[in-house]
Amino acid sequence: MPLLQEWADSRGVRLRVEREPAVIRGVKILGLKSRNGHSYAPQALAHAAGLYEGAKVNVNHPKGDPAGPRDYQDRIGVIRDVVVRPEDGLFADFHFNPRHALAEQLLWDAEHAPENVGFSHSVQARLARRGEETVVEEILHVQSVDLVADPATTCGLFEASAETTAADLAALTAEQIREQRPDLVEMLVAEAAAGNADELRHLRDELDRLRAEDASRRRREQIRQMLREFALPDPDSGDAWAKTAVSSRFLEQLLAAPDEQAMRELVEERARLIAASHHNPGHAGPVSRDQHQIHAPAVDAKAFVEAIT
Image 1 (spheres, helix red, strand yellow):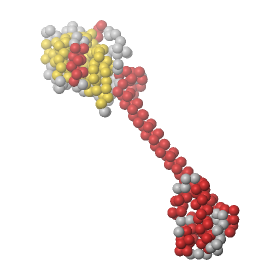
Image 2 (tube, helix red, strand yellow):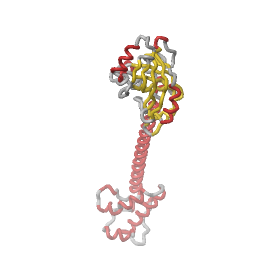
Image 3 (spheres, helix red, strand yellow):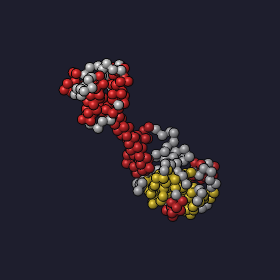
């Protein structure tokens, strides 16, 4: 299961500080939305309350592995009496060691600048993608709860403040990203797959277009060769007679012919009709073997059209 690092601060929360017996009551443990972009399902918060009960609180993040053991001197207190506020999140009482080296600093912040008092959590959770949102459906285990400074501006390992350096980001490993931000990995994989699919679709469309153009060019060249074989005029010559003898409609019929044999039969038939329009009516007209007998017709367009229809 992924290890999430979440933040909660006491900005806007009214804290009640009791120096005796060293309790800060009403601290915010977990909100409905985290700064890491996660939303928490209502049932996830309800079930998580018991997991935070009695959770040990340490000062600052561990150095190195977030799941590793903590130093004894870092231990400052414990979380108790966790309650669920459906519209706000999880709240609890923070029982701290009044003799800890940072106890007085903690008390001053809680009394005068509660926005400086915040908790960072490392938890194992079950995630789900719902549209563009990553939802925490269940918190399975609370790894650690850490008391941190300036939580309102520093949001965690993967969502740092503006002061995060390039060196900090360069120190991240792929394994850390996979473990702590599986939603980010999933999003990047999905974007890459979508981008590759779009690019592949574009390339296939372009290849189909080029193939169609090449096939059309080859067919047109084949038609020109066949017209020359039967001594028919080139329709691209610009001559009026050529456009009548080999009209655009006739060219469309040739282009639509299923194979070379069908195309040849159309051209041969056209050659016979042209020959019949200006030779002896009893003459059947030349075929491919006596194409030299075909000459430019002396008839006008009207006579030719009457002949071919």
